[in-house]
Each structure stands twice: as C-alpha cells, then as structure tokens.
Length: 171
Image 1 (cartoon, rainbow, N blue to C red):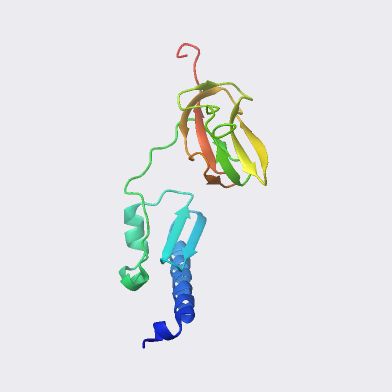
Image 2: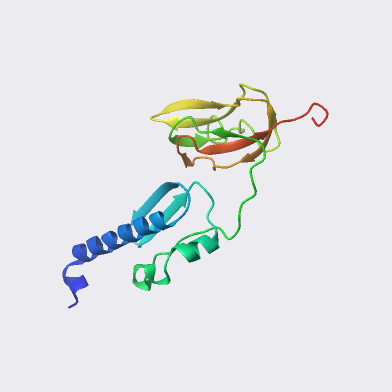
C-alpha cells in the first residue's frame, strides 16, 4: 500500500502546499500587477491573472523549465498575442460584484457594442449583496467593447467597457 493510499489527506495537503508555493513563485517572477490567484487541490488547478498583458516570451524567460512538474498537472495560461490598445475611455466597476448587462434574465441588454450613449445613461448593473448598483456612462460616446460576460464576477476598478467619442457627423 502506497503512502498516498494510507494518508490521502496528507497527500492532498502536500499537493496544495506545493501548488501554493508554485503560484507564489510564478506571481513574483511575472511582470505587472497580480489581480487574482486561484489554487485548487482537487483536480490540481492553478490560475494566475495579471492586470497587464503577459507575453509568451516573458513567461518563458521568467519561469525556469523545472518550476512545474507533470505530477502536479499545473499549466500557466498565457495569451499568445498582445491585445490591441483599447480605443476610448474605460468604464470601470464601481465595486466588487456580479456584472449584469440587463435588468433581469432574458431582458434586452442596457447597451450593446456599437450603441451611442449619453452621459448619465445606464450601461449595466453590478449586484453586490442583493443590491443592484447602476453603472452609468460618465461621458457621451459609442460603446466599442464590452469586456465581462453577463453574470461574471468583477472587481472594484475592473474595466467593464470602452466608450469612444463620437463626432456629430458620424452618428
């Protein structure tokens, strides 16, 4: 009988400790501000998310090849490209909560990409502790990108969508 079979809780604890150490080491080695770390012992998952985009070259140079062993089944998800710079002004989450594009499930979204909005217009809601908090446009313009999915958790200050100025001759 192996040690894992005799003491499965100790094996899970050691595995979790190893995952936490590896996530901490990875977060120290990577450029940019760390925004989220998820470590799970069951199914051996580690997720690390940064505010700034991370390139594949940065990961390859920052993390030694021996940092992760196949036994822990850990992978680092890194975008394969640099995203384009956002166009326009970022509308950010006013608090931590759940992002909703409509007043209720199945209802028409407040706005869609391409819509022209006015300052003060409701764009979405963020639910926190069963209270629906309005997300309003702080300037007029066109919605060029909506970032979170409906029902996704968002953090305080997280970019939700971008508004670009619209000249009167393009409307």
